[in-house]
Image (cartoon, rainbow over all chains, first blue to last red; front, side):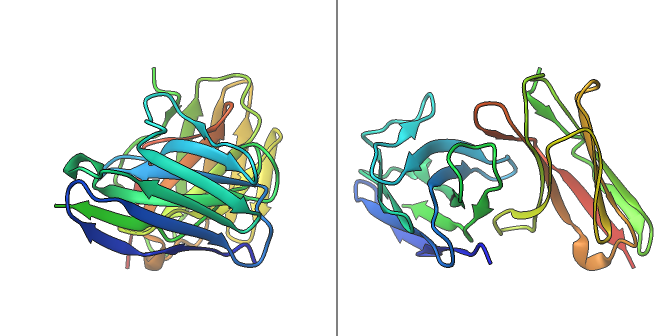
Length: 117
Length: 108
């Protein structure tokens, strides 16, 4: 149980274009979904928290107009990187929780490796 | 001071030995503590969660929490080469905060 999928697993795009990443909870309803970013040799950094039907809460320093998050249902959240630049190249990982807030177990998707050329 | 600190390692143990991984955290208000395993190029996998002081055992894994000392540990008994990975300690302090991880090498 507690399986989270992400699509695509990797993507290469040109600078200035937009990329959408999907995160789905396959066998449970995710009250809360989280988006993380991980640069090489670094740990995961939370970008934003989203609850179904409401606006995402972004961490300090994360541009909400650049990283658009939509949490349309209890099983699907999307992250759109708009006007991507090479410095946005990273490993993007979503996670999902069955409960509200971050105090409960989070189950991670397999991640999406984004390369912006 | 980092919010969640781990020794980056590598921690090298022989196959079958006990691997001991440690973590300290700075926020005394932290309520939830997790250990994740991350293989190179992959996303984290939840191993254990612990919420109260003391030990919590799950198979070959034991998590230990000491809130007074702000210390969390993970013991892996009979460690296997396939468990060579980076082990991430994560603590909730309003949000889930990860340590930098400890690289574990289990040598055959």
